[in-house]
Image 1 (cartoon, rainbow, N blue to C red):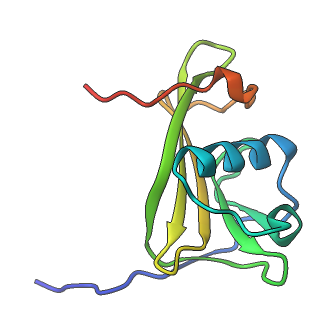
Image 2 (image 1 turned 120 degrees about the vertical axis):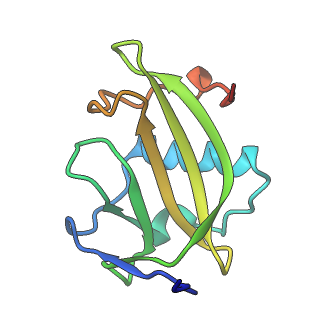
Length: 130
């Protein structure tokens, strides 16, 4: 049996881009929910590296000086869910890396279809497990 201490994945799916307003709102909402302190001017310091080829989907979070996302292992800050326009639940996770820096905004639609939109934060609910 082989053990892997650290898995590093370089994702160059697409070039980095500015986060959308909806993505920024989700990050802020989940950071507050998880009592995670965002840096001053964090919105101007962060870029999104899409991790899927979908228009709306999971993004790696990098500072604006780096256009390559490196997944180094992360842990959950907070999560929420919402219903997409077709009524299918979408679960959202805010993840930080081992140094406590924003790492990923992970969106997962329960039927794996494309996410149609990110609604206002007032539509977010807690994630419930059975």
